[in-house]
Image 1: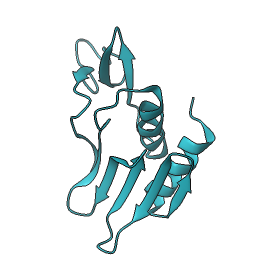
Image 2: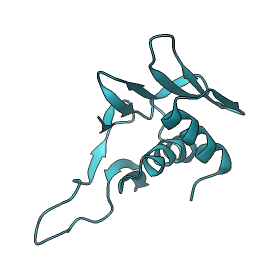
Image 3: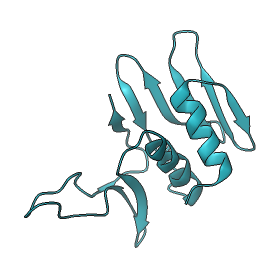
Length: 119
């Protein structure tokens, strides 16, 4: 479940609009790129060339995951970030889709890794 700040920030990010509330800011740069920052740490970016990429910026916290998952929800994707036994994961929670195939492989990620979520 996403908080109002997460949902509103994600909507602004996807729409390329400015947003600032509490510890979260979204801005559209002069070159058309869009950034989301949490406590001034860049956690999401979108450019025409590279699409949408997200990171935990070194902070595997519930708030960081909430902001990133809200972006994924706003994009209509069936994936997300979660924590299990201290490890950070990205994937679908559904390891089997048809037979042995993963829809998006659930994998442990580094908190500093950039994950491509949309083109």
